[in-house]
Image (cartoon, rainbow, N blue to C red):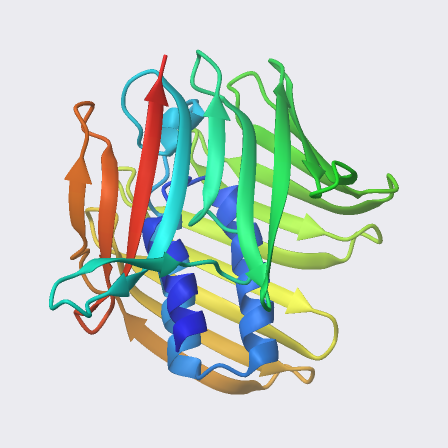
Length: 308
């Protein structure tokens, strides 16, 4: 239960809302949860919260501060998460909370004067040991290069994102530390500059995943359909439905075996955001008390924000 709530914390409160980043987190989350044998209801709830974050995305040209919904000329953001300590009868900050994957619940991010991300250092936990990853971004008018490092400063991977003349990502290629290519993702947009499809393929051009988006007449997101395949053993499909205000209303997920037969199918309805917030003078939140699906306070997240 504790591990799953850590993922729920990530998905509800992460405001770095590029759909491409959500795609990668979705795959990591689903693999880990399947390996750990978590209860299906909790798995689906965590996945649904990822979709909720993904729906809060504008697909036009915007800097990273806008994608994170940060106001003002932000120079850096430090995010830390903590367990709840209610031993004194009131909600207080307890021990640090670290998840088992590299997420946005504990990280340091820097931005340039134009609001684009320069670097990101994330902290996570495996067993009793804490680790960190560091990603450096280099941006031009036509591309973004992301270089990942380990704690020793050695390169662990590289991602090249090609941009169109509107600043939208059209092709993303990922490379391992030795320079070998291992995945490419292509993105497709409609006449309103909204993302309508992206698909990822391995070096043999075999499909790993594909996601489709449909929109209402008022350009709000109506439906998201996702297919993920992991080898020949299992795959999953998900359909997300949204309210007119863009909030996720329902998610239907099916798990299939290697024969294509559905082994499990689940439907989940999401709940409204009931978190408690504190804000700074720029109207950016600096503290959240995260409320779970049962209405209980489960974590505290704090942000330290520096401005130019």
